[in-house]
Image (tube, rainbow, N blue to C red; front, side, top):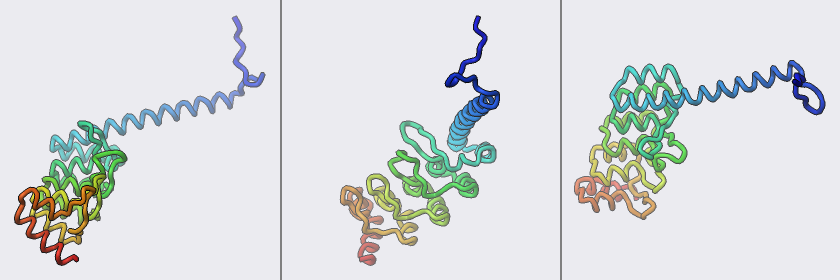
Length: 207
């Protein structure tokens, strides 16, 4: 049986070389473990939000601070942890995530059709959620991948309370989406008369 060690260019690797290889392998393994752990914690964070479990979310964000800037694919949609909390209208959880460093304008790459947390807030979250995100620096005129701003969404849903908050914070009522529709067009199309009246007045003033 040949007990000779393998050679490199006719020379046996030194002890130092073997140690470097071992350290490199260990570092790669450690990185893989950390990545898996991070995504596992992210999944638990999203489920904590769905369960309304503030204490668990608090613990998870302390254990892995990067969770506040993470995203997870759920039901074929990639959504940030912050947007998940906004969608569930969990105001205190959103405050926690913002305190821990969540970016109110971040969108996961290739995820959620380019929608920011403020887009999600305009769907059905309470007005206090919209105010909180704006106070934290949310861009009121940000476009999603279809050219929709939060005001487009609020107009299409007839959300008068959200429309007023967005307009009061300099949302532009005269931006068109990719279909060439203004906020006023969407409110009118969906039969939201009060929303349409507010947007018609705001559009005239801003021209």
